[in-house]
Amino acid sequence: MDILKMSLLGAVLIGAVVIVRALTLHKLPKKTFLVLWGVAICRLLIPFSIPSRFSFYTGIDMLKRAVAETTAFTAPVKTTGIPNMGAAPDLEHTIGIGASVASVSPVTVIWLAGMCACALFFIVAYIKCRREFQTALPVTNNFAALWLREHPMRRTVQIKQSDKIKAPLTYGIFRPVVLLPKTTDWTDETRLRHILTHEFVHIRRFDALTKLLLASALCIHWFNPLVWVMYVLANRDLELSCDETVVQTFGETMKSAYAMTLIGLEERKNRLTPLCNNFSQNTIEERIVSIMKMKKTSLIGMILALALVIGVPAVFATSANTAGQTDDQDPSVRRLVLLRAANIDFQTAMCEQPAMSIFDQATGKDRISWDGGKTWMTVEWYSYDEYKTWLEQEKEKLQAVVDYEQSLTGEKGRPVSGDRFVWNQGLMDEVVRQEERVLRDIKNGALVTKSIDGRAVDASMLDDDDDVMMTFAIENSGFKRTW
Image (cartoon, rainbow, N blue to C red):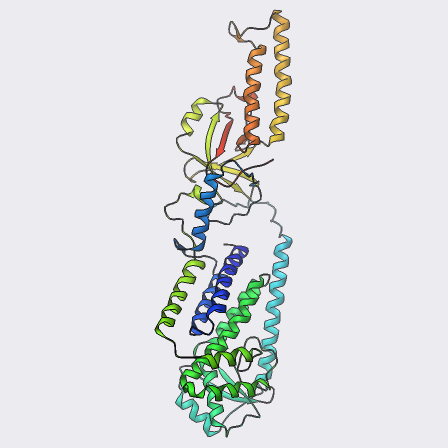
């Protein structure tokens, strides 16, 4: 799965989460949205997906097939250059000795430059902050020591103070640090408990790792505006979820006091620290409203949250279910039905099942298979103009032959003279009518072979049993060729 497809699929999922969030932000537990954002991050970073018959894309594929069946041989669309977005049969990309290295496209260069620029921003910002944080001093007062004893963790947690910050924050994944301003009032124990509880929730849930994954997704998919939306909203929901946990810990009667703590810290918010968990954020109004509207989750709310956590990923994070389908039903594979072949024996042998056709981007040519994708033949198809030009030339050649035969016999020509075939005007007209029918078929979307595995095939070479011109129709597919 390429980056563009991952980004498009991720954008659909992000859009669904944004809508769910807007409708249920103050009605569901905030952890619901963290789970959904986690699924969106996986969709953006993991280059494969699980097929599901409940997938949104399964429905899209069913709709496409239904439309294709009712619009066969209409609305021509050129197949050349359409990117392979589905799980088509693998095409061989062999680089031989002395073969030239494929050039990198400008789009790839732009994407890499943007990714490096975003990554550089996050790295520089984090290194700068860590250097400043290294000057922080451990807190040795009794309250901090007692708090650490009351809240043991497997990871070693430190509480430090720094004159470089104005509001509390947390950083570090394996050796987390709670960093407090040097001006912290250690006599206001209620406020300190609010702050430390909030920060310890960040540590316990590995929110620093979540922020790192969010930044990684943003760097890779920097060109996708919905990924930026996800980055902003997911960071907000990390804070909202921590606020929810603090309120649940201290009770709803403490909501006002905790809200006042947030307001007091908002006045002294830090500068941008993208990979750290800041106690204070610019979205203070949203946090205060969320705290004041916070209530104990009802049974219906829990059921709805569970349904969303299961349903949204199942529908929008999975891929189309292709179980029970043949490869030629994949959107990137065309199903071809043999209409006619110049060699009757060949037509009889090969028309037992439809062929499959796929565009090989490595060679710029189509490939067809008669055995379900096990073996492939490289083919070129006539364009309308090419076949028209060939037919005009063929008419001139046949007319010259007919004129020559008439000059020898002085008559209009006979079908056969001994062992030698003799052209006449009637035979020529019949052949031309057949070829003009082929020309009309091409115009209407049929595919006519020009070469097979590099061997030219046309009507003038059919005296050789190995040279077979085949005409195909595309069955039940939205892929049509126009010239």
